[in-house]
Image 1 (spheres, rainbow, N blue to C red):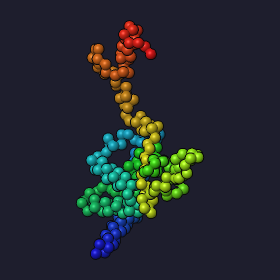
Image 2 (cartoon, rainbow, N blue to C red; image 1 turned 180 degrees about the vertical axis):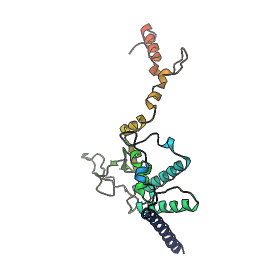
Image 3 (tube, rainbow, N blue to C red; image 1 turned 90 degrees about the vertical axis):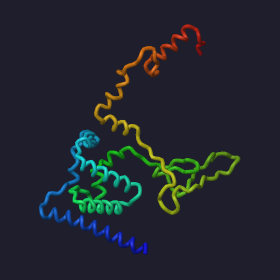
Image 4 (cartoon, helix red, strand yellow; image 1 turned 30 degrees about the vertical axis):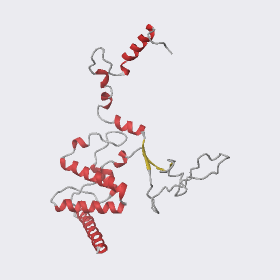
Length: 239
């Protein structure tokens, strides 16, 4: 019974997806105006392709579409194949239209990624495979086995060199047991400095109101001067 329901569910998704593809094709053949998603995104305001004012100029419907597409793109990247993600987009497009909304939902994952600037957001992000037992880190090009080959003290003459041997993947799948994501500090700072008035905000602490004789921050210089004065008076022996 469950298998039959699953098959019927996949058939329904395929019919919905094919219907949306035919609708887009017929609209193009009839000369109707359709949204070109590759050009729907405004020209980038920076050389890295990120428009920091894009969300502020969106209408409520555009913000809702952006949120839905962002969720599907992130969910697909973590849990689904590209085909399954596109089936989900087709169903979402059918569902939105059945409610009477004119919101345009793309049917391709690549188009959805472009619309939410996925490549810009993930720029500088790397993932490393980590052994859950010894915490050895592997890059994509340094792994030649499904088990950890790290040997602790390989040159110790008094003990036999044995590799860790811990499984790096879950069962027979390619899903790693443990991953270590790393976000480049350089790329992160680039994104921060593209925000409006970010440079002024990080300098606001210099112009804040400070009460007299109160140590707010060691970088103000006052605590350092006080310590130097104590050392000069000889109250505390200098080391």
